[in-house]
Structure formats: C-alpha cells, structure tokens
Length: 252
Ligand code: C5P
Image (cartoon, rainbow, N blue to C red; front, side, top):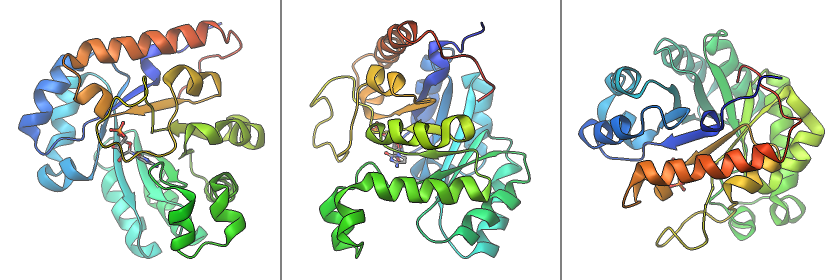
C-alpha cells in the first residue's frame, strides 16, 4: 500500500509582506513541506511573479489562497486567470451562492483544484449571529460547514477548507469526494501571541480525524527556527499516520 509522505500533508502559509521576506522562508523550507500557500497579502503586493519564485525555489506545490467572492462572471474570469498561473489549489468562498461556486469550477476548467472556504476558522458563533445567521446555524458552525460543503460538492469543487472539529462529520458525509484542508492548526496551546484563530486543533488530531492537508502559518513563520518547527509538525503527522494504517495515497 502506497502512503503519502507525512510532509505532503503540510501546507506552509507564506503570510509575509513581500517576495524578499518570502524567499528565505521558501529556501529554508524547500523539501520540508508539501505545499506553500500564497495568501492575499503576498499576492496583492507581488502578483503572479511570486508564484514563479515559489515554484523555482520551493520545489513544492502551490496553493493560491485568493478566497474569491464576487458575481459569477467575475469569479469565472478571475479563476481562469489564476488557473493560468499553474498553481495547484485556488480558494473561493462558499457563503454566497451555488452559482458563484459553479462559475469558479467552470473558470478553473480542470486546470486547478477549486477549494470552497466554508466558515473561517477565526469566526466564533457570536460573530456568525452578529452577521445575521439564524441561531441554529450560528451556534453550531458545523451545520453551516456541512451545508456549504454540500454546495461545494454539488458545484464540482475538489475540496473544502474547514476547521479540524468539523472533519469527522465532513468525512462521514462526503468521504473521499471532498478534500479536507484544515487551517487553525496549533501544535501547542497559546503559542501564537494574540491569536485570532478560534477553532483550533493539533496536527495529530487533525490527521487522525481525516484531514488531507494542514495549513500552518504563524507557528512556523514566527518560530526561532522555522525548519525545525516544520519538521516537528511533520513528525507529529507521521506518528498520527502510523496509528492510522488504513489511509492510502491518492493524488491530492
Ligand atoms: O498563522 P495561521 O496558522 O493561523 O495561518 C492560517 C492560514 O490559513 C492563514 O493564511 C489564513 O489566511 C488561512 N485560512 C484560515 N482559515 C480559513 C481559510 C484560510 O485561517 N478558513
């Protein structure tokens, strides 16, 4: 049975302000992580050139976290432009409409995997309520995540972004039909000063619950030695995987 390497689960979020700040991190972590995630801060500043830089120096796959959210025609065209950058994953928000998700998948045209962002891991029930969601959906974000994941699956998305606590029900409902990409990963409690993430989980718990990719930013970026921090997370993933011998390799 072929297994995915533990490092292939790890996505490092390159949440830095410039290509100059990204480059040393990419070089240091090349070969140690499965994917680099380029987020809004870096992409708005540097544009597509930063994807080239990460591809040349990082030797890993690229996740372009654009979190698109607009009318379907605009999302379709933006996704087509993103697909031309030869990245592996691009995100779109699930919260607005099935038509927006369908447009994203159409724009991708099979050249890039579309991930639907269900509910941000920084959001807590009180905030969902304040945003106008019905109490039964706001109080348990899991219901909202399932509903939005169903929209993503119906539209043809390859996967969703969700919190670790939603993995079990997501995998029960969708099994391998949807990749589960999980941010809000914290190897140890309280390690990020002033943390804005609310729905967090350890790497081992997330892998045991069925995560396909773990997105980790600050615990690696802000570590005294980012490589050591990444390797420690990969080790935790590896231990969790060895306790779960049923997981097999799939092209993900
Ligand atoms: O620093 P930290 O580990 O919290 O980084 C998490 C990364 O995952 C950030 O780049 C953030 O934009 C992203 N993300 C998230 N929650 C989502 C989708 C993406 O935290 N639902």
